[in-house]
Length: 578
Image (cartoon, helix red, strand yellow):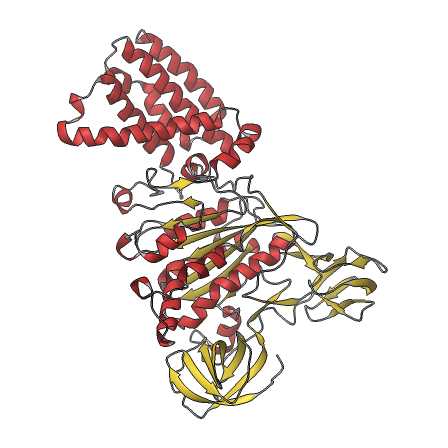
């Protein structure tokens, strides 16, 4: 960054600093005080510049120097992003630890990409090719994928020269006839969405391998989802499951304002996880952005923009990217704290009046798009929400619900019953079911939607019957309704409950999910027929095939086991005279 003008501090209020003597633009990066703390211009009033500083401002005094960099907050994009751990403004934490130890001093910085490492570059264009911004100029092996080197969007012209070999991110690998130099690295301002050619309909599901999500509340590639839940309901475990098993090729995990011990768990477990698709470490396709609750509040506000910009970069290569924001509530709290220091008019519960628009702005940057490279890529955003006391009526949850199309509601009562994932099937919903119906019909089964609707209707009917059961007990119900309660229990305990730590049950392919739910439905049909022939429910429930159904989800070879179980089921019901 080139230094432009210098001024002086006139006022300090926590992370918000007022300076005079400089004339920056909105969102320019400035360096504050003798320690050169990084900050960002957030307000201009007359000759005063209001700056939010990304680090602790303790000891900073009026009169100290302020330097305007003349550029907005940017991230470095290029080979080396995958496997990295950054803070909210893309400073590599392992590099800072090597410099400073476990406790990093203020004002210390390092480039986002390693300047010394050499990457094997293979060009995919040749001399004389006419290029437009966003085109792919070459490939570099990186982590578990092939990194496609993109021409910056503001470049265009014919290739004057291009070289193959090993280069650092700063080395020149080619040149256009316009004089523009080609490098492996480029920068992009985080608050500006990267451009694309066209936005496409989200009609392909993001397959997660989690039965409750894929069968009942699916998320489309390029879609938006919210996971609200109180403490201990399993937001982090679900985020890790989605990172590991979803069919997204790149994962960007933003730990925004989470507790240090939770972030430590992510940082220690992710490097040890194995990517089930390649057998390589999961970090080979993951970027971690760690911004814990004790880090400066201003950097927390910037961390989600850093994450979504990195996600857009890989989307532009034609990859499907999954972005986990854990949690957007902490991000909103950072906005509230900064807003109060700016003495802005507060909205509901003290949050700034622009809370909903900022959330919309963030979620709007996802989507399945046709990129300038000619490929189709997507960003699916899954935002965890941490409502205080599990109150879903608070502003952040309500503002998020107006934007997202999938709502995975975590329930503390299910957690107390040890039902995991603790997703409440009555309050959760997905608005993608209709657009995804054709895909499921063509790629899984013709009657996928019919099976899903049957399961949802059974669970809904169980909920209505439970109110009667609480008043008069289940023995007062007719046999048909008692059977409905039993089948719903099988759906809950056999199908919806899923162990993240069991080697087989942790991931369930779509075909397996369909066949498993189909087997439960077949049991229900046989049982309904038996009830009509006045077979006691106790005899039906005690059949061996019912307990075998519960064990089926832990079996690796479900196809053969399911055929055997189906035959046994028919024989056992025939033995009852049904």
